[in-house]
Image (cartoon, rainbow, N blue to C red):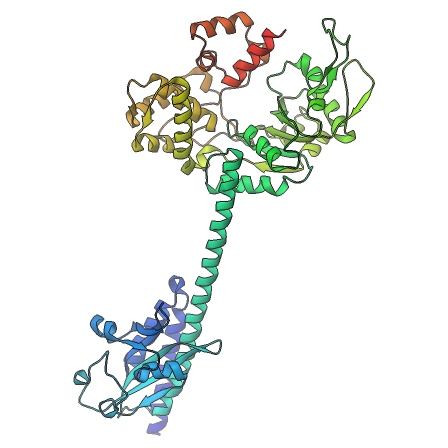
Amino acid sequence: MEKEKKDSHGRALEILLLQQVMQNVGKGGTPDAALKTMLHLMSELLGLNRGRIILPETNGTTLSIRYAYGLTAAQKARGRYHHGEGITGTVFADRHPIIVQDIRQDRLFLGRAVDKSDLPPEKVSFIALPLMAEHRCIGVLACHRLRLSERAMHDDMAMLQILATLAAQLLHWHAATEARAETLLDQNAMLQKALMASSRRYGIIGSSRPLLKAINDLEQVSASNANVLLLGESGTGKEMFARALHTASPRADKPFIKVNCAAIPESLFESELFGHEKGAFTDARHERAGLFEQADGGTIFLDEIGELPLAVQSKLLRTLQEGTVTRLGSRRETKINVRVVTATHRHLAEEVRMGRFREDLYYRLYVIPIQLPPLRERREDIPELTAYFLNRINQENERSVNLTPAGVKALQQYHWPGNIRQLENVLERLVLLSPGAIADENAVLPLLQQVEAEPLFQTAVHSAYGAPAQPNPMMQPFAVRPYMQAESHTLAELEQVLAQCRGNKTQAAQMLGLTARQFNYRLDKLRNL
């Protein structure tokens, strides 16, 4: 009866130990909590003292105590063994458990971690078992046991076999998981390096995850002829991505034609895109090939496609469907082979719903959408972008203005509703207005506040889906400079402002609320009329 009670109590302790160990499996993503709990309860519940788990070191020739309970830091540090050395090394090499009945009398027992003089006066046994996983030994589980323990030796050995199996599986699982994670990290690093190399090849600056994802999406479709729609807020670099798509495609040695649909007067759309025959306009002196014909064999990039008039949308749809163009004033169809890349900051589906954009054209264009990230989602790219723009702007203006780290950090904290285009604009102002060669956050913050107060930046900024940009608590949001029609200024006005700026087109454009590209387009257009 007494023996049955002891056996029942022993089983209850064993079950409690296993329950507590299993509750800690996976905690923290490592086996540490479970193995430490196991060694602790081996001592406290079963009397298997000074438990330790010995694992191979990275050099592959020695073993050391990795987990222990009841050993001091100095004792753990001394517990190092070569393969085949002492009880521990022999168990690891031969893959068989060893029981030393009396540590003091066994010559093979080294007593390296716990000196024999530190043992209790009773006879102490030493038990060591191999940790087996995938038919190989990955470590050793060992402990001290009083020879005259109340528990039967075969019960302790059975329990230790279970614990050794559990410990081996936990360690093997963790090592396999770490190996897989390391492999994935290596693969990710290689992919990121490749994508960064691609971004450098295309002239795209940055290495943030959202940017690299957009580049990866671009490269995946570059070899096809499918129409691509670039989505994103104004100033996110849609033209650069369109050029990158062209560069990565088999059409790279053919023309790349860029069309800003927001900058062409409505009366000239058809003539610009599809060309005209002699006599189509009263002042026309010769035939002219449209931009689609000029792009034959290559790529045409229709920026701000949402600005296209409905009448021109119909003709564009026919061109996409049939692969032909018909010049204004002619009935002759000309076969073309052009890849169409479009971009917009508008929500085209909403434009379709409002009747401002043809649904059939929408589905023709919306084949491969690529979302370009706004600058506020790739703030880690701002230091590199800043360095690039400052270098270029300094060279153009014969200046040598540089930003302090605090100044760059102030730029990173801003929300940039105008994205990269706005960053470039602010840096150009900073270079031109800076009294010295070094600018810090005290120069950056007032400039950003000044930009926010300007009337041109007061309209709402919308993302590709029409949602307003998220405000930054540091400053109130402002709007991107809106597109203006090409006839927004007369030639006399443009040349007068250009003269005031001593021929500096960038400064002239800023004074008129235009980008440098918009200013040049208007100036060239009006001078050639």
